[in-house]
Length: 88
Ligand SMILES: [Zn+2]
Image (cartoon, rainbow, N blue to C red; front, top):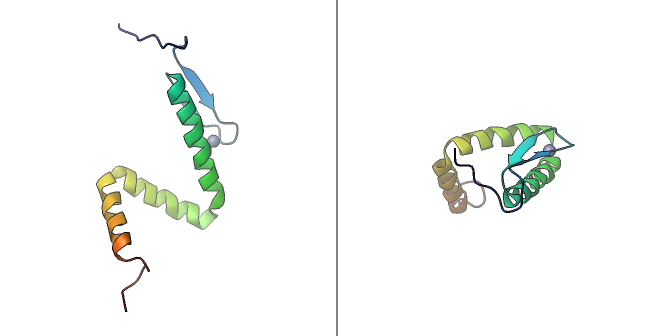
């Protein structure tokens, strides 16, 4: 077994969110702080959406996370059609 000992002296830390009960396990202080920040950002975004938006957003994210290259293509399409419709 080759377990790396982190410089800060703990093997891993569990971040438990009091708002949604999610748990993240971080093995470095950097990862822990990043997880706290990203999770807080996620709550901030989520709080701004209504129920309909949340359901649509979640479905979009599932699609995108399953195919990151699709996300890049969709963004390219969005840039090409800024007004969301056909041109004049
Ligand atoms: Zn949370």
